[in-house]
Length: 231
Image 1 (tube, rainbow, N blue to C red):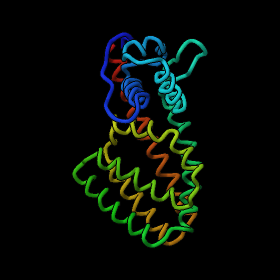
Image 2 (image 1 turned 90 degrees about the vertical axis):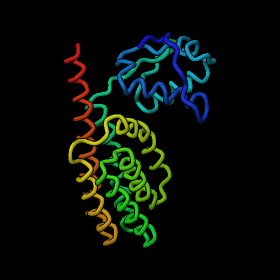
Image 3 (image 1 turned 45 degrees about the vertical axis):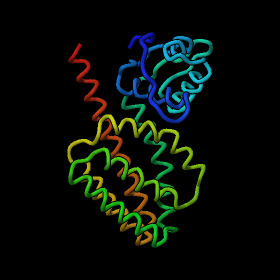
């Protein structure tokens, strides 16, 4: 993508957040290729902005691991590959398995009831093959569980890459049969939480995250293969 080409910022939130969303979408879609230079002055001119919101947007993208900031040179788009996704999911697995195991010992009846209601909604979305609704319900389902221990710092660290994973999932959806597998995993996890079985909850969480990682890696590699064939 030509960095001087004008484009429209999406509405909502602050200027730097809108710019961050636009740049992130361009990176994840491949419109901004790995290794592309993101020059602050050029981006500011293209969108009619001062350089401050551009710097803030790039700093947020760096925090998500999407770009590498270079002193006095703007930023470079990082390569999105299986290794990168693997690193993100390794961090998530360590934190989420810990929180899920703790949740099994702390969860109350109203929270379990809320999870069961949400899971019925997920099953309905999966039955109609609604990937967008299923993805949102999946995020909310796990967020409820992860919030049970009350570890705000762990949640903050998980949130660093949550937007990135959401963007990947929005772009690629779920692979064949994945929604059915997610549903089975969720029902088993609810049972483990209800039984206060922390170790089973931890094991199920780890398996669930590894399957999610593999599903996204397969989609990403399929995109790369298609791009190579198109050259």
